[in-house]
Length: 413
Image (cartoon, rainbow, N blue to C red; front, side, top):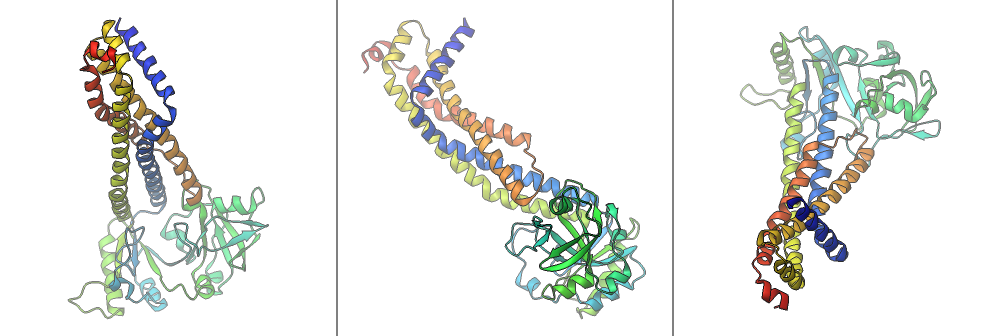
C-alpha cells in the first residue's frame, strides 16, 4: 500500500513539474548557480592541488629554495612593498653559494613563463605548431642532481654548452607531442620567442602539470636572451641529516653579501619543498572564503524561489487537494507529496548544476592544461545541499497544504 502511495506521489510530482516547465526552470536557476559554483571551483582547486602534489613528489626530497620573496610557490595575494623593493640575487651570489661545501647539490634557476594563463607567455613553435604555455627554466647542467629530471631520450645539456651560452633545450613530453607529434624531437630545431634552439633531450611524458610543459635551457643562455628577467631562485639539495646546517650556511652567506644587520630579519625567503603544500592550502582557503558566500547566495535565492512556486502551487491545486483528502488521503500523504515535489525540483537543479560545473571545470582544465579531477565529495555535497534546500523551502507550503479543510478545499476557498 505504502509503495503504491509513494509511486502515486512521484507520478503527481512528475506531472506537476512537466505542467509548469518554464516556471520550474526559472525557480531552479538559483540552485543551479549555487551547485555549479561549488562543483566548478572544488574541481579546479582539487585538480590543481593534485597537480602540485604530483610535481612536488617528482622532485628530490630535501630541496630548499632561496627566493627574493618570503615564500616560493603559488601565493594568495601580492608580495608586500618591502618584498618588491628587495634586491634580486646576483650572479656573484650564485657563485658564492655554489662555493659552499655543505649543499649536496646546487643550481640557480630563472623562469620565463607563468603558471597561469597570462598574456606574456613565451611563444614556442616548431613545424608550424605552437606549444601551450611552456615554462622555460634556466638552470645549470647539474640540475638533475638537485631535483629529479626523468629523461625519456637524449641527454641534459653540458657544462661547456652552459658556459658557451648555447641555444639548446630539454623539453617536456607534452611539448614534444604538441610540436613534433610522432617525429623524434632529438636534434630537431624549435623557435622560442623567435630564437632557434636545438632539442638535446626529451623528458618523460608524465601526464602531469606543469611537468609536461617544462623546458630546460642553460641559465646563462636564458639570462642573455632575457636580460629583463632579474629574479633568480637558488635551489639547494641537502641530505636528511644536514638540512638545517645547509640552510644556516646559505642564509649566513646571503645575509653577509646583502649587508643585513645582525638584529634585522632576512631580506629573502627560505622555503622547503614540503612547505609548498602549506602555501597551496592557504591559497585554497582564500579562494574558498570568496566562493562559499557566492554559492550560499545562489542557494538562498533558489530556496526562496522554490518556496514561492510551492505556495502558488498549493493555491492553484486547492481543489485537487480537497478531492484527494475526500478520497482518503491523509494529512501526511499531502505533506509528503509537496515535500517530495519541492525536493525533486531542487535535486533536478542540483543535477543540472553538477553537469554544468563539470563542463566549466573541464574547459578550465583545457585552458590551464591540467588533469581534471572531480571530487566525489563535491558531487555528494551538491546533491545533498540541493535536496536540503527543497526540504527546507518546501516545508511551509507542504504544511499549509496538509492543513487545508477538505470541504473548503473542494469548493476552492
